[in-house]
Amino acid sequence: MAKIGGKVGLMGLRPPGSDWGVTKEMAARADQLGFSSLTMGEAWGEDAFTSLAQLAAVTERISIGTSIVPVYARTPANLAMTALNMDIMSKGRFFLGLGSSGKLVIEDFHGEKFEKPLSRMREYINFIRMALKGDRLDQDGEFFSTKRFRLRFTPFRDNLPIFIASLTPLSLQMTGEIADGWLPIYYSPGRMAPSYNKLKSGASITGRSISDITVSPQVSIYITDDKKEAFNRERPHIAFYIGGMGTFYHEYMHRIGFGEESDAIRKKYLDRDRTGAADLVTDEMVSATALIGSASECLEQMQRYYDDGVDEIRLVFNEPDAAGYHNIIESIGKFI
Image 1 (cartoon, rainbow, N blue to C red):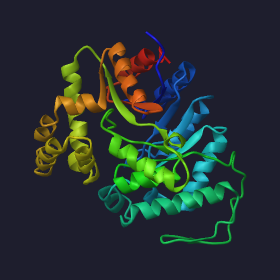
Image 2: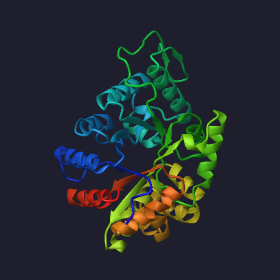
Image 3: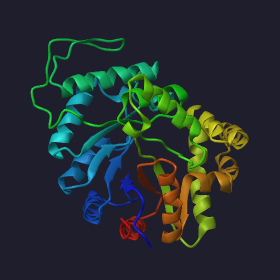
Image 4: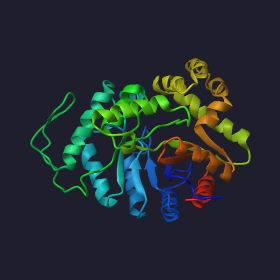
């Protein structure tokens, strides 16, 4: 089989029950095989930055990035210091993936008021780019007012890439306007025209084109001969996002053509019937947003993403143990 037609990264190398030694070994192997990136997200478990620092220390070429950290979880000054220090430690391999998360996580876990996420995102990104240039960090913003200080270290470079995890039409337009890349979830080849139109609209505001924005979705992968079992493992994940993560994913599913199904799933989930909600996730919804089958079948499915405009696929693992992670890494790594 020919080489894969685009970049392939790995997201969240933390097999259930394993220690950090296992994760570092897998990261080093991914670096050796030629995977393009390692990313870690952050919700209410391990934080992303200290995790990624571990991976940066045992790799040499692979990009290291967050996917995502919520802007409500840190001050812009703290976020700038941490991101730019990560770039120094990794010798220019770091990229910053940002998101707003949702009301439940931000208010009930972080204790912050979840309001005006897009305005807050703009303010954070502006602050980080000021820090990158070595400017005095004077910013009289809507959320933060800062003055007098400059960073007391020199950034590794002046163009640290900043990605945004966006779903809504307004956030997609902002991504096109100010971000270096887009980190979507549940990307569905052939159904993304509305999202791309918003990205293009935003890009035109700042004289850019869609080619200036790196598109890097996270996509679940199951390399298996038992497709039915894999479909059933993926259904609860989709149901959780539709029913348990606010309204963003529910509305997004409407935009990619799964509105009726999404309405029914969300109703079941909000009625506390999670099993029933998962059962309503159709095979079409799973196959439209995940990679399932033999290694060769998954590789063929990946090509649909590249043909649709994707630059990099970040593979997400839902395996029960480290052996499953290793199998996917080795199976896909042969074709990079």
